Image (cartoon, rainbow, N blue to C red; front, side, top):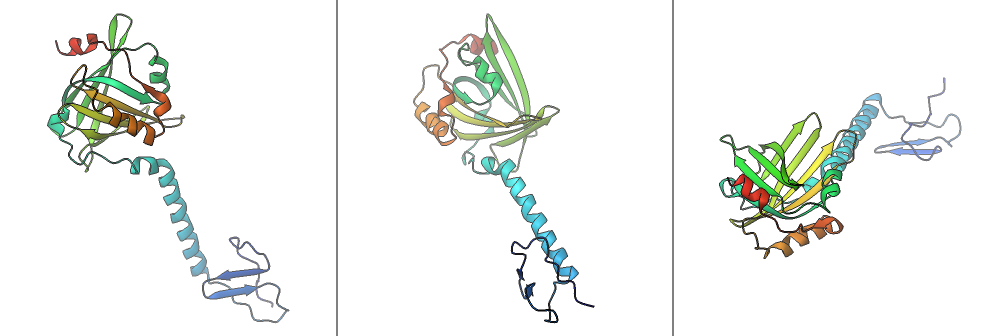
Length: 227
């Protein structure tokens, strides 16, 4: 009986298949010895290919986030408190729908005893400040937090900060929708925009310069959360 010389599925050239340490020449005359890979070798190749595909899938999902560096000097207690959101840039459809009508939003950040965060953001819509609230879980890296619920997953990173400003990045993966990304510029000083150029540099780096919004100054929501 002649040996089975069918080419494995991974071969591109149907007349000559090569594998490490093995050569299969389908153009050889009948009777020429053929060396087929063992079933163990094929299983090994399949496992390797599956691992590669999983790695590529993970890169597609998280590669953008992996390149986002967190503030190496992040301090949770310093980050907590009340902030004015003096500029933002976002691909989030909801925020994009508000960019022509909002004034300066306000944010209140609460550091929980377990190291997690609660963030309340207030947007002035009409005469009232509307609240958006989220809880973020700490990770092993200071300044990096995550959130997950029935709507999807959020990845939050503080890119730069000190006692007077912070630049916050959020990537949101909603179910059934492409991921959105948002950059926000937090400031304690209502007129202090000396770090705005740094924020614009991050917008440029992340392809968000076209989405940049610097809302008209208003302290109404900030005064509301300040009591």
